[in-house]
Length: 452
Image (tube, rainbow, N blue to C red):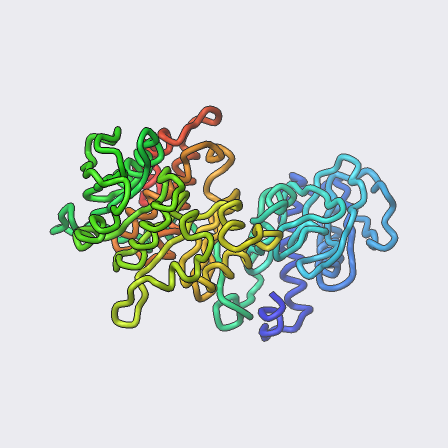
C-alpha cells in the first residue's frame, strides 16, 4: 500500500477526503441516521488519524455530535457514544496497542483495527473488536489472516481512486478468491469430451485403512473427473464408490505399475492414508521422479518427501523446459515437517518460501487457506468455516484439486479453485455434525451455486 500511495497522481489531501467520505457513509449506516447521535473518534498520527478527523468534520455537517480524542490523550474509558470510530493506527503500525474501552458502543475501524498487523493479522495488545471496518483500495492480508477477521467485523472495501494493478505493487500479487475466479479458472466440458480426457488416478490408503482413499476418490468424481482409478497398495478389494475403477497394487514396488499407464490419466493424487514406511517413501519418490503428469501430494505423500522436499520435487521430469507440475497440500504440522519450522505469524511468507524452494504450488490449509506458486503469486481462500475442522476433509480437498487439474486448470488455479469450492460445499451443510462425506455430496451443489 505504501507503493500504491506513492504512485497516486492526486495529492494526499484528496485521498484523505475520499477515505473520510467512505468512513462517514459507513458511520451513518451504522448509526441508522444522524439526528441526536453522538460519535467519538479516536485519532492517531499520520493519514489514518487524518481520515478520522476529516470524517468527524463531515459527520458534524450532518448534525452528528462528534468528539475527537487524540490517541495520546485518550482516557482508559471513552465517554457515552452511539458509535466509536477507531482511527488510531493503520496498516503500517508496528508494536503493541491497547484501545480505550468503548464503554459498550459499537466500533467502526478505519482501514484496519488498530493493533492488528496489516501484513499478518496478528493482534498485539488489546485492539477493539469492530462491528465493521472500512478499508481502502484493496483488502489487506491482516483483515483475512489470524486474528484479523475476528477483530475486523464486516469489511467494506472503498474505492478511493488508487491504482492497485500489478504496475504499482512492490511484489508479486495476492488476492482473495471469488466465485468469478473459479468460473474463469476451471475449464468447462467440451461437447466432444469423453471420460479419459479428465481421468484421475488416486494412489492412497493401505490394508485395512481405506477411508481416506475412498473420500479422495469420491471427491474427484463429484468434482467432475470423468474417470477415477483407485489403487490401494496391498489391498485388492478396498471399499470404493461404485463409479470408481479399482485396480490392485502390490504392497511394494507399485510405482512401476503406476508409471506404466500414466499416459491414461490427466492427474495423479498420492498420499491420503497411504501409511508410513520405507517402502512408501521409496515408491512415492519413484512416482514423482517418473510421472510427467500433474501430481497432488497430501498426507502420507508429504511425509514421504519431508526429509528433503527440494530434492524430491527437483527429480520430477521436464518436458519442453517445463517441470511436471506438483501441488503440495500441507496443514501447519506437515509444513513444519517439510521446512523444519511451523508457518509462524506470516503465513503468506511461509507458503511462498516453500513454493519457491520446491518449485511447487503450495496449498497451506487453515481458516484462511493460502495458495502460493513458485513465482510468489498468492491466492487466499475464505469460503469455508470451522465446519471443515473435522477428519477427512483434507482428503476430500485433495480429490477436488486432482479433478480440476485433470480438467485442464493451471496448477495454482486448480488448487485455489478447489479450496474455494470445498469451503462453499461445507457452508451448504449442517452447522454442527458435518462430516467429510457430507462435503463430498455437497460439491456439485456448491459448483452450481458458483456458476449460477
